[in-house]
Image 1 (cartoon, rainbow, N blue to C red):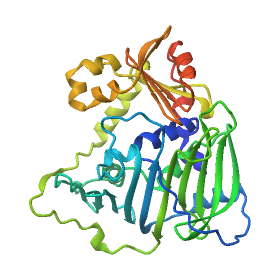
Image 2 (spheres, one colour):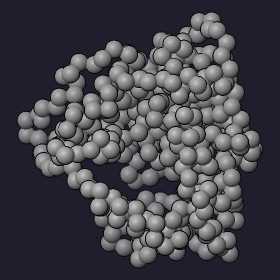
Image 3 (spheres, rainbow, N blue to C red):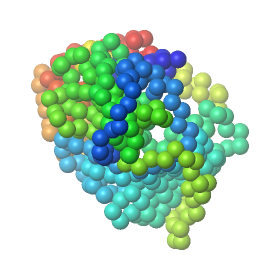
Image 4 (cartoon, rainbow, N blue to C red):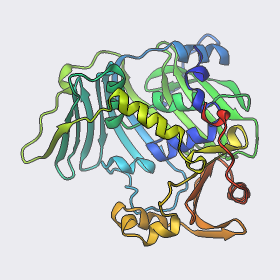
Length: 389
């Protein structure tokens, strides 16, 4: 099965994939050291097959992240060296990762003076922050299904590794993407091939996405996202050290330190009836709440409407809810914009632009603000099968 077939919902979403990278936990400093040894030539098609067939079930390593998106200084964005997981949106960060199959995963964000961990060890799910010496411990119910266990892992395992980000980028490949190779590289002391994804539409803010693929293990070692007409990556995620040996079991056992503030509980897992009800509710939701897409490929614009009763940008700035959740100061740091389409707040970066309108409408894409304003002047497109597949 191809990458695109496995991720059909992202077939149209090249800019959305990059937006997810920018918001979710993103990009990393290069682990390149020295020149790569001569390698047999491989085509772009062969490298895509390599990525699809690779299965890195065990391993560990150090990932160094760097995000230089040109974002405004947001009140909740931690600086370089912060061990707060929410700080991954900007600056430089170092993560340690260990994995031994899907049931044993650990990620540690290393700060200058602290550390934050997320761990899954079988039925145990832990999070811990040294900044406030607080931990949470959740257990999967004994009757949890395999699907529920995978969902539970997602609750405690934030994105941010080259494998996760490469999967998002590869899922977005469609006819608007040019796929080529760029020779070889040396990453984390290992030889690698470089695969290049680039938009055919030059109106995109994205110039190219480069994926360094281990020449032996076939897994992504580094991902770089480079803006249009830029020479340096705006987003970069890569290993500086990696091992494909099985980590010691002790890496997945967490013992709360003395004085820790511990919160215990059970992971709430929906039963089949609840899942069916949720699907039914999603199907019958108002069309305006369903995300839609206008345009195609790398210059498409993702649009949605906040649920009925939710405040838009102006409302959240004034509301107690906005102050309580920390959204008010974030919105207040963004410039106000207005036009024939209405008014709101604008978030600009080197790769992605987001417009949060006062009426609750949200538009985002790897495009200029003018493209979003044009889309905002039109009614939200009616959701279609192509926008949700």
